Structures are given as structure tokens and as C-alpha cells.
Image (cartoon, rainbow, N blue to C red; front, side, top):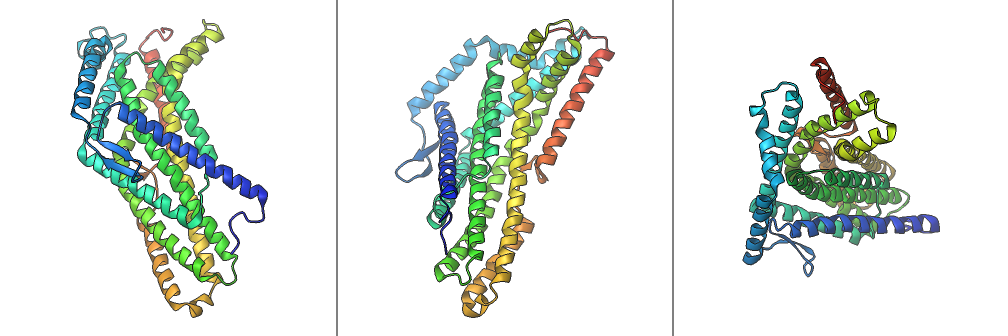
Length: 411
């Protein structure tokens, strides 16, 4: 069986660069998130370079005490924390109705941010959540090592998704620059730690399935697959079954965080309603000032959550396509090698068992990206619904302000 890329220097060079980009991108995402996580002194997760896996390692007591004192001092001496808490409950004391709707929207957004920040901080410090995360991370490391030992270096699948992710990070940075309060910054930081780990997993997941599909395509070209190739095929089928099971476990950790992504619609409505007011009604400003105001204040908060939702949807749709392709390749192998059933009965029996397992997993527990619940798949169609829901609600907010005679030209 010819090796992947053999005899084609251009394809071989392309695969080599894609393999490097995959390694660099995943390493950058994981190590950056890990350094921030350790720097925040939350949780007990640590990477053991000698064992090459994640472990639970309690932090030094003095480190925890010093970090706790610094955190308390930061919150006590930062007046913005107290003012943020006050603004979260200020609608109770509002007497003038002119700005009531806007203040209520801001208050709801702040309350959701406080609640989500507390939940994320609690999870990151929870021993059970830490153990589950470590187990799933080690499963991913083992699967990646097993596939590399069978198929060699893996290649990046879907470089456009990585570009969208980089754009998303830029808008996240723009969003945090314009926050006057520390709580939204902490919320974004905690949320991105988990989302970055999930994105790294999704990038690896696509590369795993793509590598298996490429092996199956090469396997089909063999008139008489060798015993070594047949063993590889069985090993890859078992690894795919493990990938499917690990994804179900990862989904249990991801779903609570994914529900927070949907709650970002309140923040999006506030940002987009301001953008609509700027674009449509601020005619008295010159164009440079108009675009400069909303660009720096609201563009990051209005685009970053949408790009994050779109990214998850694109990952999901790509996974659907690749699983259908994988199913098709297995069917072609079964049809193209009828003689193999007579030559190696044990291989045929084992392959039929694994194909039955694959069919059951594909129907009962397909690899998908869920949001809010296990019954709601976050594909591109959901991302578009999320976007249109944001736009419609933003326009409704502007219409409400106009109907109540509010001055829509305020900054």
C-alpha cells in the first residue's frame, strides 16, 4: 500500500505544513489557556511533563493564601466592583421612566454576567469538575498519540475555521479593552479558558476523522490489502468507537458552558441596538465620529459572541459531513473486497462487529455540538437563527425607545 502523499512532492509538502500548523495552533491555544489558568490560581489542574498528561496537583497553601488576599484587595479597592453590583440592582430604585427600559436591560445583562461568572469560578475550583476535565483531557492525549502511532503526523483539517477563531479572539480583545468593570473581564476570561480548550479539541477531532477517512481511501486502492493494513483498519475502527464515547463524556462538561453562550443574546441585543441607532439615526455626526464611537464601544461585544456561535456551528456541520463520508468509505470497502471474507474469516467477523458498533454509534450517539440541551444541535442553521433573533430583538428595542419618545441621539 503506497504511503500517503508518496510520489507527489506538492501534496507531501502541503501535508507537512498542515501538520505543523495543527501542532503549532493546538499547542498555542492549550499552553496560552494553561498559563492564564495557572496564573489566576484557580483549580488544581496541572500538566506533568514527565508523564505527558494532566494531573490533579493541589496548590501550595501559601500560594493560595497570597492569591486570595490579592483578589480580595483588588475587589475591595476597585470602586468599579461596588458600582457594578449597585447597577445590577438599580432598577429597583429608578423613579424616572425616561431611561427605565435601557437601565433594566443593562441590569439584566449585569445580573447574568455575575451569575455566570460565579458558576464558572465554582466549576474551575470544583474537585469533581477538575477530575472530570483531567480524565477527558488525558483521553484526548491518548487518542491523539494512538492515531499518530498508526497513521503518522496528523494534518490540519479546515484552516478557514482556524482563521475565524483568530478573528473571534481579536474581537474578544476589543470587547475587553472597552469594559470599565472588572467582572465582565473576569467572565470573559473564565469563559474563554473553557471555550479555548473545546476549540482545541474540535480541531483535533476534525484531524482525527480526516486522517481515518484518508486511510480508508488509500485502503480501497489495494487489490489485496496486507495483513498489516487489515490490522490497522481494525485498530482505527476501535479508536473511532473510543472517540465517540469520549465525545459523549466531553459533552457533559461542555453543555453547561454552552448554555452560557446562548445567554449572551442579552449582551448582543444591547450592543446591536446601539449599532442600529448609530447607523440609522445619528445623522448629525460626521461619518468618522459616528463609526469611531460604536466601533470602539460596541463592535467587539456585538461580533465576538456571534463569531463564537458561528464557529461552533461550522465545526458541527463539518463533523456531520465527515461522519457521512466515513460511513460511505466503510461501505465501499465492504463492497470492493468480497474475496477478503473468504481469505480471512476472523478479520471479516471482527470487522462486521466493529461496523455494527459504528452504525449504532452513528445513530444513537452521533458526534455533534450541542447547546442548551442534548436535543439541540448547534449547527450553522442554529447560528443563523441566533443571529436573526438578535437582530429582530435589537430592532424591537430601538422601536420601543422611539415609541416612548426617548431621545435616541444620546451617547
